[in-house]
Image (cartoon, rainbow, N blue to C red):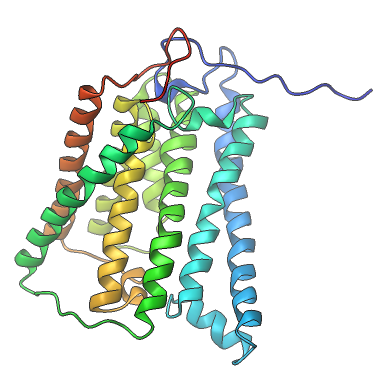
Length: 310
């Protein structure tokens, strides 16, 4: 007998973002889905990144031994390395969508917002608010460290900037879809308190960044908390995606123009002042994004009837 299609469920009206995958008597779905999603993401990213490097080697006419290019790519010393890394991380989107559909029996569109769609006007507003908020704190951080920026573009800077602009947003959005989207909702389907999903997803997000000192870990963990609360309180991923995209474009763009992308990627420690200022910048943006959302009268829970995205 051929099994029928998997039924796709719809969240109840009045459901907040962290509980969009919740289902009575089916907490096991979140307990199973979360580790499965992480495992699939690691596996798929581990396949995509080497494939991109291999393609770059072939298109480059095999001008150097593959092992040499692969080593340089792993250190982000060539644009192909950054493309490979960003596209590997972008694999989080199809993984999250697949797990939501097959394990939770929900449409992947509920990863986006409580309306099941992108609220484009709100996303644009957040993209406009993020640069001044994050740049202001970056300027304060530079002054506090006493090390002014020196404009010294790295070799091949044009190629790096193109890659940063074209693939950087894919990587940032994919991380938000996996961590502030799927993991927050999966944990939220296990424990009713939204804080469980917010803190749990932030912890996994920080740990995923590998080797780091305590202050850098706390910096990333705090970003995860701020972004998670923002997603919860605004009912969607738009603001968190905007902050992540703008932060990465600024960080890697300035690195390419003042030092190197490889140096920025190799960052493993910051001091307490840097961590506090970083978190302050994200918190400032979060407050502004929340106020903009209130001004736009965003839906923060699923409506009783289909609503038009703002």
